[in-house]
Every structure is written in C-alpha cells, then in structure tokens.
Image (cartoon, rainbow, N blue to C red; front, side, top):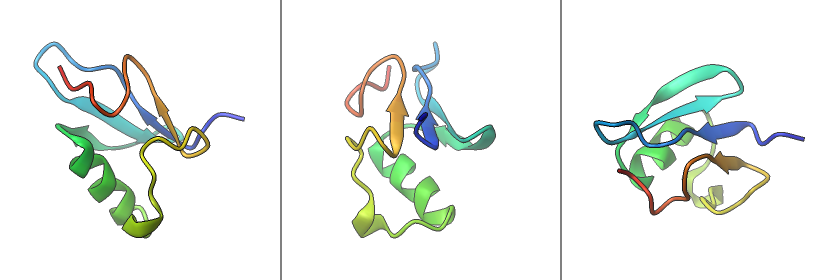
Length: 67
C-alpha cells in the first residue's frame, strides 16, 4: 500500500511539493513545513514521524534533502 503522503523530489529552485493522495498540500522548504501541512490536513503534530514509511513516501531523498 502506498503511503498517503508523498514528498516529491526537490525542485531546481529548492523546496519540495507535498501531496496527500493526489491533492496538493503545498510546497515545503523544510521538515517544519511538512509537519504544518499535515497539521492543517488534520493530523496531530505529536503523532507525525517524518521517517514513518507508512505515512510518508520521500521521493528523491529523505527529510534531510531540500535542494
């Protein structure tokens, strides 16, 4: 099963698109942006583990890759 959240590869100008299923949540410039997008989508920030492969699929690098 595909995780519901996808953090896409870094863009040429920096930052990464974040989607939930096929809906765009925004363009993140760091891990805190990803957490904020997920909070706005209804998740409790204390429950968000950025390295949880059941929640987030990181494409083009993990949570430490932004450019």
